[in-house]
Picture 1 (cartoon, helix red, strand yellow):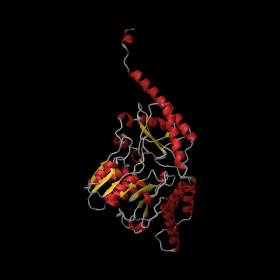
Picture 2: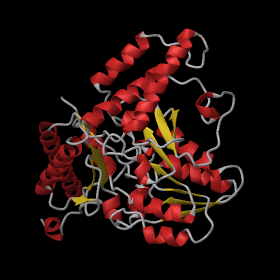
Picture 3: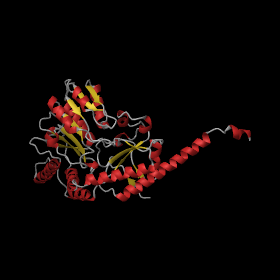
Picture 4: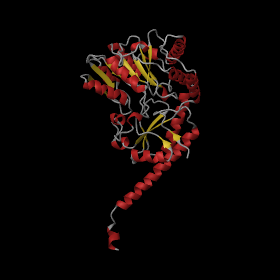
Length: 397
């Protein structure tokens, strides 16, 4: 049975052209880019070319902006929060719908004595700018608000939040892991102090990401023992992974004008097919601006875990929430923060498309999902009939 991959927010397949670039870089057998001999200098040249190209594709062109290579989005988020927080205690603001790598980092700082304020969202999952404005009247050291939510796809008003933070003299970090490679990025114009990304979310390799940091942001290192990357993220950089991430971004940039619209059309078609077959379907965050490839759907009346298992058996890959928290059976904290009813939260699944998703994929996946839903409804009804006690009339026979 052919598998329908609708879980690209968890990870994306490596693009064949990225694989070729990765293989070519591996075959080149680059030396340590910190070595001073000719082979090391050659490796350093290739690495810095890739770094400069990545920064340019992200719109990070201003003098002094730093692009620090990391192992992925989680490390980039941790480096941003702990690195911008510094050593002394202070006050931090985060949104209530952040990825676990931000929320858990904030909770750890809270245990160290930091004051952390969590700003809420609307029923559509949009960050409350008025609440942020009010919160910034109290001295604050750092704000972190994700750009595109990994569960609902709802886009947050990051440019507006950046204006508020700049006016208050507070650095703003944004987790853009689900946005990079999906929508155009212009770091310099956006106005944030730091931005996180991960290559495997846009058909690049796993194990590499980056933190883009404004020249004025006072970032401190979390590790020691090397001078690499200005000492802010020491350790030997992988030339191969940097080259591959660069290639993945280049492939996105070549389709940047068309891919978002194509994915949004497929997403809308997918939701339309499911709504037609299941009128009670709820599209969470549908009234807000969303990432073009993400749908968070509640199949009210069905249990999300039971539906997830049934869809997996039917060859449909999806998610019950963030991949980094997928081992948890707890309801989605994002949907709960939106104040949605328990029936909606308890029946929600996330579906996400990729660059290679086709209209045929969407049609086939929707048909399978509706069939699974119908089968579960019938099974549920059968269990209900079996569980019901005999009627009085039946007992009299």
